[in-house]
Length: 357
Image 1 (cartoon, rainbow, N blue to C red):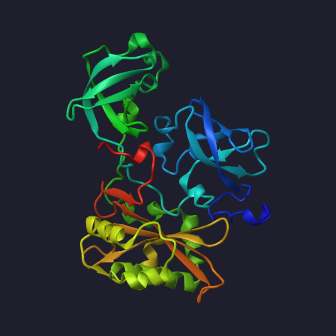
Image 2: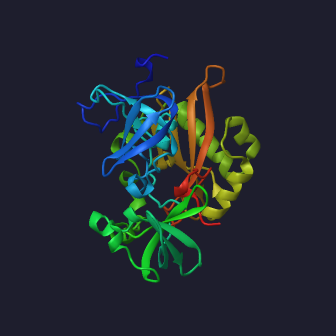
Image 3: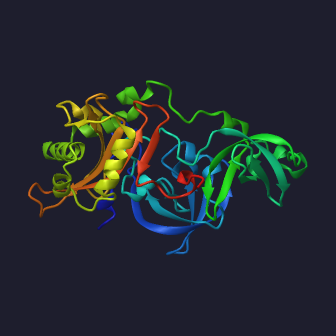
């Protein structure tokens, strides 16, 4: 496929002078350095080149673009090159999950809830000073977490060893997740501890808060047969008609038992078929190589719509009766009805989504 063929349509709400962006293939890179407040330096394994990952390209979630969640130096990450004319010289790459899926401008709906690994603010006791970090015992669980020195404060002077909290001192911390090897990573930065990771009540009730204007406009352009395929899959899943759902989809990333368990956990049953106006709660974004990623809420008798969302990849398939191929790629609980209840299946890998056993 030529570079020209891989270009993605520009979002309707992007500036008219913004150059088109397209993505290179998925490849592996190793983090070689950190530019504080800017991003990461990585080494591309296939070509041997050095590249730069801007902080906003680290993750789709704004919370996880914070330095606290950056991969460590020496860690291998999957990336895609950002191919555009305005950045000559050092290659630019992205590590966003949406880019790995072929979405140049991100998922149609944002990740507004906290990742599973993020814990509440809690008290811990410093038990040991090490070379570059502190060990802190969490009072509630008794487990010991690791607090890197640079996560003590945003002020570099307070990160210096002579300003570390002394052993046996109680401090407030927040759990970030579980890093490779079982290490519980903690944060003591006041600004991070005080932020709320849950949208305010009613925030998601507005369609403009769930998706950007360009996404809404693109969704309106979907062909009728694509909309009908989304509706048919949503209805089959809602009615637990797994045979029909299997006929309508292929290459799914979770099986029907997993789907049923997720639906039971995050919504009041019974589910119902989608109403005529279900597209008000459906959002789509173009895939670079053709087709669309579509997020659609399921409906229940009580909630109408529910918190449960299915995500489908619908791509052209000349061999299919309606020339379409649909895959169930994800299910999410978005916190629309019950703020603070956020989850998804398959759950992403990595420290951000890893919880304490």
